[in-house]
Amino acid sequence: MVIYGRHPVREALRAGIALKVAYVAEGAKLDAELQWLLAEEGVPIRTVSRAQLEQIVHSPDHQGIAADIGEFPLTPLRELLQRAIESNGVICGLDHLQDPRNAGSLIRSAEALGACGVILPPVRSVGITATVVKASAGACFHIPIAIGNLRQFAKRFLDEGGFLAVLDIDGDDIRQATKMRPLFLIVGAEGEGVSASLKAMAHAIWRIPMGGRVAALNAAVAGAIALWEVLHRQ
Picture (cartoon, rainbow, N blue to C red):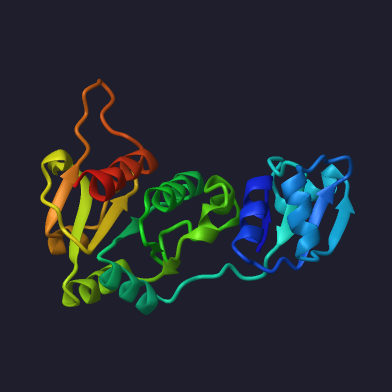
């Protein structure tokens, strides 16, 4: 995978990801910390034109730098399950999210707010792409991320004593929610929402109360609010 943008490359280095090569656009002015990290890790640097860099990353939003990290470092599902059970923590599941910016933003919120991991399904999902990494501002490298069937994981999670909650516009007010830990919290895409099979398994279905005229929040914002509620208010 070739990631791009200054924050993603910096956070990959800070997380100990071994970069195969960094591509730097001619004339790009990198900040001192990023230059130091690249030099400290001995990352090979290839200078290219801005047009070439845009072709490499398929985006004009590269901020003058990109890097080849090989395969994205995914976490095994069993490891994420054990982590959540042992820490009494919260895992965030992303169901049907196909907008990379929504997915990246929600991963960034999950990392910032203290979730112990994120799971994306292998189908009907954006997966982890360079655009997702960019939208997460590199937070993808600081939180365990797994790819797997959400329903199967939820079954194992419940078998280990965990709880399952989903976000839905017709759910109960999340501000009145009873604390449940460890928790697998699933956020669905706008429109399609969370799968009916997951709703049927859930201990709770929550909604974000709305006070304005807009019918609903996008998945990234709704998920961030829900994570704040369960991680810092309950």
